[in-house]
Length: 180
Ligand SMILES: CC(C)(COP(=O)(O)OP(=O)(O)OC[C@H]1O[C@@H](n2cnc3c(N)ncnc32)[C@H](O)[C@@H]1OP(=O)(O)O)[C@@H](O)C(=O)NCCC(=O)NCCS
Image 1 (cartoon, helix red, strand yellow):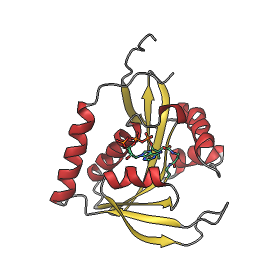
Image 2: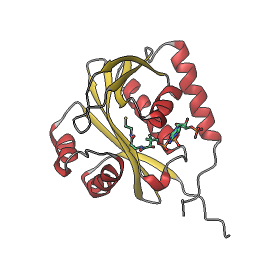
Image 3: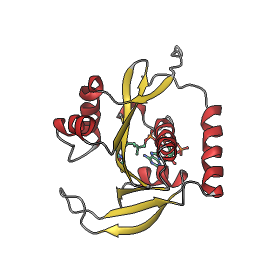
């Protein structure tokens, strides 16, 4: 088998030009995807919203967003395209989201995740999110409960040390090959 060349991953602000690719990943990732106009509205009208994408060789392979509300960063969405999962793309994106939150003055980050979504929960735990409560029957399609996960204060020394550790680990991982 011939090795594929490594691909540099670039994290960028989401723009209107990304919306079709984002919608395709959204449909592949969620049982009740946001409608196509939702991300457009977020970019155009929601001043609290900040959305990032990960590009591999120019193509969008992941995206995520936060709402920055006073001193809290609320993760609104997070997805990696199926072919690129388990290549540390989610980790790189979550670190970028937390960096952005800290730079904009957030003191903690919070999110909801399906109780059954153990992969996502594990990703969030690796970045200091801890379960703090349940929103019963939160998801409209099957009424699954949501687990609420929140970080320690982002400026706490333990959290800063954790992020520094994760940053160093990610920096040591070579650029991935494009999945085949
Ligand atoms: C959850 C999701 C974002 C993870 O993205 P990813 O790029 O595959 O994650 P990473 O490769 O960075 O994985 C980081 C860590 O998370 C955990 N993890 C991620 N996916 C996992 C899975 N399917 N099973 C178990 N652990 C998983 C692992 O601990 C992993 O570290 P490791 O590979 O060293 O064991 C991705 O699977 C996805 O988009 N899922 C569909 C949408 C979704 O559920 N979004 C979250 C909504 S709250």
